[in-house]
Image 1 (cartoon, protein in one colour):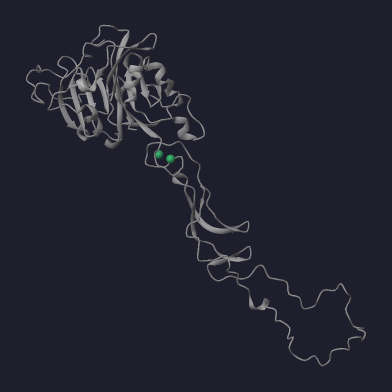
Image 2 (cartoon, helix red, strand yellow):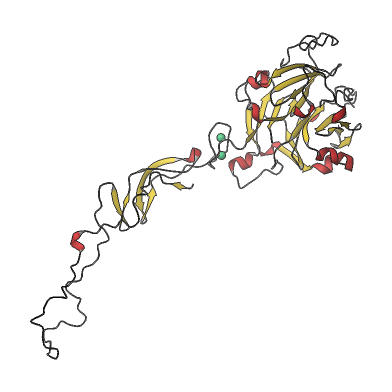
Length: 400
Ligand SMILES: [Ca+2]
Ligand SMILES: [Ca+2]
């Protein structure tokens, strides 16, 4: 186990008709005056009526049509702005649209197939991307974009959908992509992968993001099978996972075959070693109850407020510029450049802990001022969930 894993420092479509004249009731059937047939005058005298029994030599053949019957006109003229549509005067030529989001197209109403319709046809949907546009035309903007990645040395974030296949076609899914909110994440530096935890399952993400394809999700499985070998451990997990982080195999423990993993729950911290060869998690030292975890003010966060953490063993991005000796007036910490440190994020603040010797928090800056979150396309502060830090860059997952 890494030497700093000791208590108490534990850081723990649709067709849309616009402006279709609703005032034009279906009952508006305008009938021309010429089509009106006068009713016979049945009250007047009939002086020349033949006697009832007299023959009718001039009577027409029985099958001849009555000479005065009028055929109804189904194509009446309509007032200006209306057109005859299946015998009814309806509004046409009015602006309308079809489709949602990027698929929305505009046209005018017209009568087709005895009904009012829109001349526009919706555009084709595409994969949802983080661009402020509803690319897949389901009425929701950027809904699938929940993963932010800042490659090492980059000055702008990449934003990805959780499931690249589903983002292009909601009827399909990637085999191993999460289907539940992401609650915690940690990296395995030596393998270049990130473990992502939901309420019930673990998922492995390929940390190499030179591309973002369906192949990014490598594996998945039930949480209990991998992390909960006994009832006591299950109880900690059941209290609620706050965040997770890992300690690289080549740091602190002198064992290059195991990475340290800490799962921080509301009730306390649970420790594991992850064997790089077997890829199995084994319980490490005994869990540390939350009640026994104390962090020193003034720079430390409150235990239950931390929602994201990762360890950076080099500070190669220079995101932490303060000396532990000066930032929070901790005179017992030797002045030196920051090297191994842990970043712990609350809803408002980025805290830094010396993870090399003193295991004390020495820096606290507003999230908006923390360098990576100042870059373009950074995750909105309110959506920042747990993170994972690889040599290839920083991952941030949307908060549940
Ligand atoms: Ca959408
Ligand atoms: Ca989009």
